[in-house]
Image (cartoon, rainbow, N blue to C red; front, side):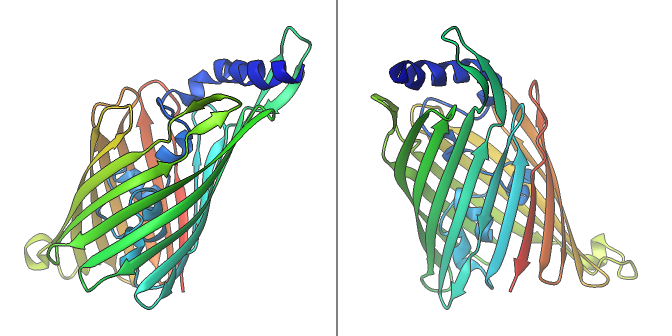
Length: 315
């Protein structure tokens, strides 16, 4: 009976839960590692490899936190497809030219009811994934950051079958000019993900991207007597490819406007090219002092709309 439960029950869970996983899983193991979360990056079409984005950069480029101006605490949540949700907690700690970031990522698919022919009945958590991360980014001069992350992943299917694996990331972020960034990363290198004897290769992913900032000319584009005192536009473009899958392009946009009262308003939009289920994304961010709140919207052709949210506190 144990062998039956360990082999057949997870397969039944996948069959019942297939609709939830269509846009998140591919041909490799541990799809949680290839599905970044975070409201800012989500609003920008997940085009974030060349962005110095603090804790949110961990899922795109471990060198991203290297340019962080201060330490921070970061929390993010996103609803899953058909139920459940993702969560990320991270705390980049700035230690001179080095930034150390412990982080925890999870995915809970929610419960499903089973009634199998062998008499197995009841509600079980279809899938519960947990990833513990320790990341470091080093600022090697004023323009170059290098980073790496070690990941310890555990996956539990139907509260019956489980697997664990270790992976690592490497990345760099280079400021070509004051306005132009280039980023590249190699993610999720390491163990195959195995349940019993069956396994899938590690979701090794390559990413590269550009980011360009344009400061708007206030006298020409904005009325100085208005509440907006500063504005710029941030444009991003990314390419990514996971092993055994084709490569994809994505692009993003962020407009930053400083309002009276030292409040920063950020408007975001992005597009994921050639995705069967996803395309447009939108986002909004508000920063006041050390607090930064972001909200995202990910459109889907056939599946549930997703609403990522994140909260950051600098210190």
